[in-house]
Amino acid sequence: MAKQLELIPISEWGLFTEDPKPYVIAGPCSAETEEQVMETAKGLRAFGINVFRAGIWKPRTHPGNFEGIGTEGLKWLQKVKKETGLKVCTEVASAKHIFDCLKYGIDMVWVGARTSANPFLMQEIADALSGTDIPVLVKNPVNPDLDLWIGALERLNNAGIKKLGVIHRGFSTAEKKEYRNDPGWQIAIELRTRYPELPFFADPSHMGGSRKFLQEISQKSMDLGLEGLMVESHCNPDCALSDSKQQLVPADLQVLLESLRIREKSGDSEDYKKQIDHLRAQIDIIDENLLYMLNSRMQISRKIGQFKKENNVAILQATRWDSLLAKAVESGAKYGLPEKLVVSVMNAIHDASVEAQNEILSKEDN
Image (cartoon, rainbow, N blue to C red; front, top):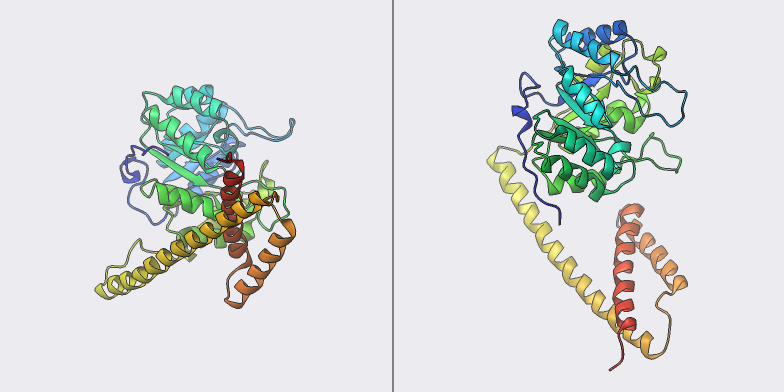
């Protein structure tokens, strides 16, 4: 079971001048030149952005691609702070990156998806951060592994980092999909459920991979009640040295943010509270009935397992299961249930049934 995290609320991090809805971190994928960094920062500052982001070290798949300007770029971020008043942040992937960021007065760092998937690197970063109070955001690992994401947070928290939050950027997949990364919202929802107090940002730029998806992903994030967005913005995206297709000019980012409908955490009216309590009570009853029916099904599955054992029959009956699943999908469609939901639920039930039957077959006869 995951340990509880000791956290300082984001309102006390000293990064945002007020309590914005949403919190927004914006800036180019990569710091390329001093001029590009300053022009973008001034464009973002003009409509109230508080925190400027820029990649200084860029983890790239193939050598020879632009891998970031390096430590020289930290001087440009210093200049952004001095001339615009913006707070600045960048991605880190090693202890050296941490030490350089602390030396140059970087206000916040984030850990990327490739680094958060590596416990050795996460421990190195946690050790380097020990004794500091710099805010740290952790992107989800490249693969949908919730425990790995939580483990990264625990390592930082164990090192004394309490100004801690997460960034959901979706998950890498070999399947051909509309977005660059599979949103995997169910993973984000599960993390949110376990740690409701954890500051939660979405990264629509990396999730979508294209400007045309940024608004819909950002709105989805707000509909789910996430606190903030990290969005890539460049003064001249078409000329960007990395991820040009997913970056917005500052003016277009302003339009996007103004288009968002922000959902309240809870309704204040007595009528809302009364109605929501009534509907939730109905769900509680249905959930109890579902659990009762699942228990009844599992009891029958165990009887089937015993019967198979007595007749020396294998547990898995693939043809039977394929037929059952197809029938469930067809029946679910009649009730307006998404196929993905039906398949997911039925597979979970089937896996539990197989495991229960396997336990029966593995027991020694008295």
